[in-house]
Length: 155
Image (cartoon, rainbow, N blue to C red):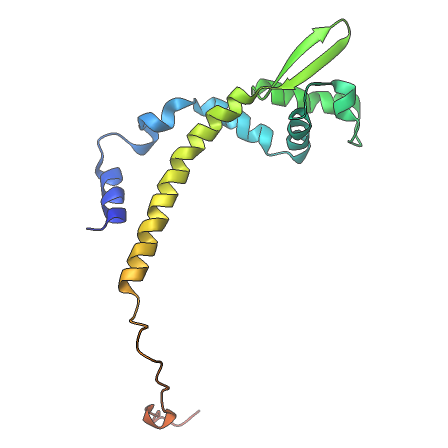
């Protein structure tokens, strides 16, 4: 049995379902749902990108977008609920900054799948190389006169 088959076989016959694997449970599903939902919107991704440059207030974050402050506030609330940004308040001014810890947690969760697919694609590549036809012999053209012709008449 090949490496890929062995891994698949062990996953299928394992007494512990893959979704209960210790490696996959480093972050709760509800947190992953919130993070991926937050990241699914391009406006929120742009806000996160802006916050990589440093903290900003709501008005500064709203500047590049053609939407109202309440609409931006809804986006910020979703990012905050997902744990991707944090807020500090000074008087009436709300300062927001990137909370990179949550992104590190999700990145570690995704790393498991990156390793899984990298391993499986490497195994597939090794298999394809092992079963590929020998290409060291020069290409010999196939003569059309040696190709059998159909004895059936076209309809």
